[in-house]
Length: 132
Image 1 (cartoon, one colour):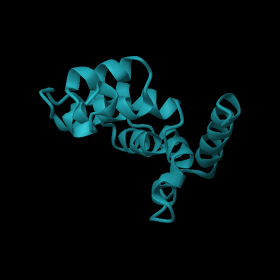
Image 2 (image 1 turned 180 degrees about the horizontal axis):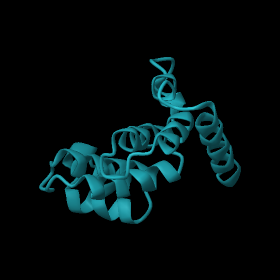
Image 3 (image 1 turned 180 degrees about the vertical axis):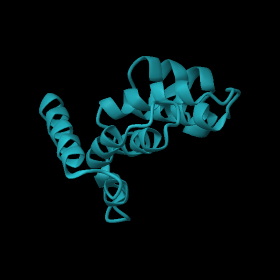
């Protein structure tokens, strides 16, 4: 079996991290989750988790965008910021496929101006990151 044929469960953390460092959004998400949960030989490190999940989120990985929103909402590994959380939840909203809308829940603690700012930031992000 070649390296490219290895199932993800057989990939070492070093191999996964190398893919993450090369820009693979799926690997970045997995590395971030490893740091978030303190698994695969990693010490639990919310800041390092946020760094990796943020890289994947910025590449358009919806699951990472949603998780980055959670991190901003709770202040896990990043400063707590409801506007930024709402923005990432907006960008990652397709990941849940009709499940509970996290934006509605977060928006209950935001002003109309904050929601408008978050929506503006999400639109700016989309304009800067067009999909193929």
